Length: 163
Image (cartoon, rainbow, N blue to C red; front, side):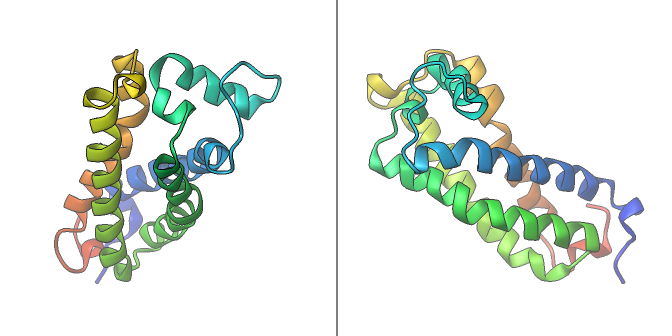
C-alpha cells in the first residue's frame, strides 16, 4: 500500500522541483530550439532572461550548433510534457512512473552531465563557459535532481516507502 503524500516528504520536494523544471523547459529551452536569437539584450522578458544567463556563462546555449538544438528540443518537447506527467504521478503515488522516471533520469544525466558539461568545460574553447560558478548554479540541479530521482526509483513500488 502506498504511503500518503504527507509521509513522503521527498516526493513533495521532487514535485516542486519538477514543476519548476517544467517552466524552465518552456521558457529557456524552447527559444534556442526554434531559433530565437538571444545574443543581445532585448525588451522581451524571455529573450532577455536567456541573454542574461548565457552571455557570460553558456556560449554553447547562446550559439547552439544543430546537435545542441536537438538537446534543447528534447527538453522543450519531450522532457517538459514528461515533467507534467511525473509531477502528477509523484503527487498521486502512481508506481507505474518508475520505469519512465529511470529512463528520463538516465537520459538527462547523460546528455547534460556528460555531453553539455563536457563541452562547456573541456570542449572547443569557443563553447567553454566563461563563468563556471553561474553555469553550475543553473545547470547542476538538472543533473543532481535526476540522480536523486534515480535513487528514489531504485526499487519496485517506490511510493510504498519514504525514500
